[in-house]
Image (tube, rainbow, N blue to C red; front, top):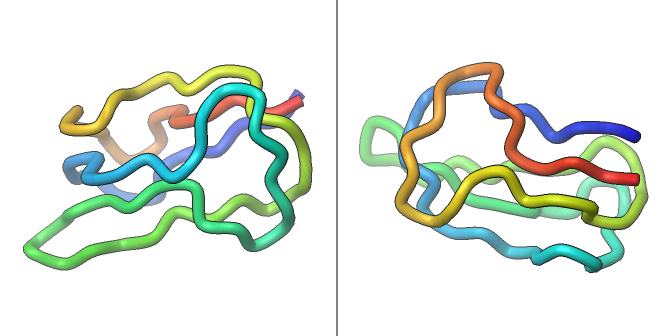
Length: 70
């Protein structure tokens, strides 16, 4: 299992995947809003989304687990 971890604090503006979706390396899975900028979150490995840990509108800190992949 692998995890998608946020690399900065901000509000989770938009989720682009849901549980059960297949993702490929480099695919954008979410967009964070931080300091009035939209920051894409990409996956580093291919897999299937097992669990989405946060919801749109949630505040996330740097290092939070956003998505678990299998």
